[in-house]
Image (cartoon, rainbow, N blue to C red; front, side):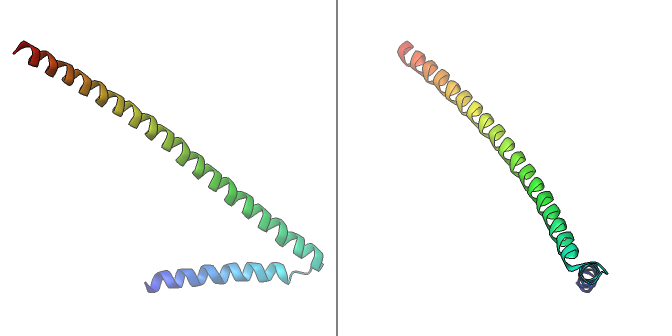
Length: 94
């Protein structure tokens, strides 16, 4: 538990240092704000692309599972009807 806290602390400090480095860089404030805005947009676009990919995969898998379920249901229905017809035949022969 202590190691994970240490790692999280180091990563948090690195992120804060990078942010402060950009914030206090010898550049005009408007340029710095634009850089931050552009990076935020890039991260947002990447996150959206990953999310869309995940949703697409889930949707595709869901459709496949649904089709497989329908096929198994129809096969079970056919098997039931076959057994029912055989039972009727046996009943009429006795």
